[in-house]
Length: 379
Image 1 (cartoon, one colour):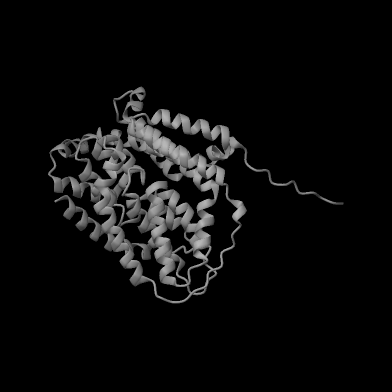
Image 2 (image 1 turned 90 degrees about the vertical axis):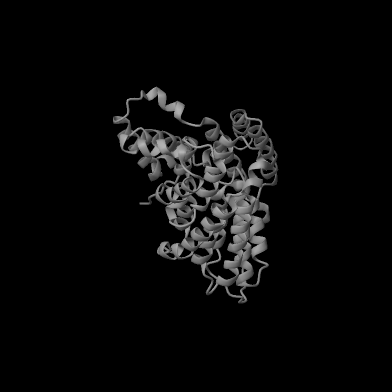
């Protein structure tokens, strides 16, 4: 008697969208916090929607769609493999991976840059003696350094860009001194931390596997979307990007981690509910009167406690010193892993399970240096 095994069926479109909501532990935690805090709030539930910065949410959603489209095209992965296979020194390879991570994070956001670069790096694991764990750590540091340059590099910058009403170029110019200085320090650290020894890389690649048409479409939509945000209409820009995705590549919509949008909506709500508690109202009321140093230290150290995105959401509601906040929360992405969600993403994707301690051995010096550089540039 013969038995047949049913082939595993691919998850449906709805299942693909819904799966991240079931697995996202951070979202579950934020939802639980919102439910608990709402018990102590006199505000009606209908008021909660007014606490969310919907322009920021629309900008983030549009960027998620576009960056996922570029990732799905497969071209950047193909390009990375081609370059890596031509590099013959560990030090040169490390400098390339760090530079590519930083560069990608300026236009594709820090998490998408990691989703592209870390798998490429892990694929090098067969090369004898290559320190994969250390490379992943430096890639995490690189996306923190690179993403702070542009208004679309990370979620806190998206929010700060919306609130500051600066142009894309204006925001980038404001952040350039800090980003470039930290990046140069990171390149210097990479030079000293990776030896000049010969290696031979051999990553398999299929040039036919990437989709040039999808890459070009996403590139054009990317420019149009940034223009719509510049003009103050991120909602219309999102509508256009979503319509294009539905027409030309529905799999992009299915593969986007939509739970991240809910995470940010919940962060806005949780922070507002938290600030209504009597035990912290006096401290929150003092934020508008903080000196520049007090505000900078609150942004920096607050990022170490609650991560830099919630710290940004909290501070922009009580202070319009957006440059000080931007420098503080972006420098605060270094240090403890919780300082930036990108750190946690990188460490979770790394093949080595005991990388957390080693990460902090590199990250804390960068926190100290970044804080000193940021404060020096502000003053």
